[in-house]
Amino acid sequence: MQGIKTAKFFERRGRRIEEFGGVLWHGMEKRTLIALPYHLDLTMSREDAERLLWKSSSAGIRYGSSGQAGSPCGIYTIRDKNYGFENLSRSYRRDVKLGLRKCEVREVGAETLLREGLQLNVDTMQRQGRWEAEYGEPKQFERLVRAIEESEGVFALGSFVGDRLGAYAVCVREDGWLHHLHQFSLRELMNEHCNHALCFEMVRTQLAHPEVEAFCDGFAPLVALDGLDDFKKRQGFTLEPRNTVSVLHPLIDRTLASDTGRAILERWRVKRPEDQRIGRVVSIVDAARAAKGALQLEEVCAQ
Image 1: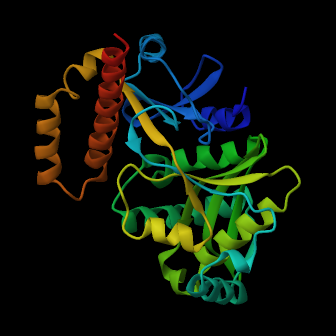
Image 2: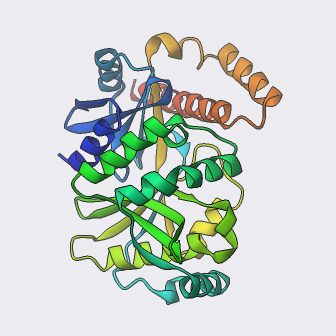
């Protein structure tokens, strides 16, 4: 079974873990389950999906699939074991070189993360217009740091300007993949190109690792972020096609995923366009409607 190390890491952070059909799933906000690891390409029947939903008392599940309908998405990957400056766009290469002259990239210990990491988390969430207690509340962040320290294959890399932490990333190395899970940076040191240096060295060194065949930077976000796709591609990432398949619990599917429920969600989103949580809910519902519609069409064609 893939993703065991990642699942144990999430469990130590307080996330719910479920096993179903030989696949591990971890709990996210709003009682949603997501398949682990993120690069999995799954196909799941409606009956099995609903069985998992009833078994786990979850509101919905999400997974990536190249063979089932959903919301067009993808995972950002690099598979070039010889990754280097030649993989970067010209402008991004310049910024990376500036960052490497000013920063040192190395592993970050628990004491440093506990002392400095919280401010980087808060700065990043403020820039992105979001808030997650795990990164912003001291006690919850301490649990996350301890989970990094205690979990096999999980580590934090940081970009330092002198003795100050300018940016850090949390990664897990498992099953031939390096998964980049989280990244945060300090507003005060943004002009030092800490993120550029960190991203480049993280990809370069991890792809050179004998146990790593591919680097995964996760799914394209449910709510599009301005410039993110361009930023990833300038780093050398490829967006490998996947659909985000969402299946809602039958009781929720009859309300939120109905035409009336979708119209109410849209009015809610128009009233609060800055709230990314609403956008994520709308995207999940749209993916669920797309998957359900495709399945119904297949059933009609098969008759």
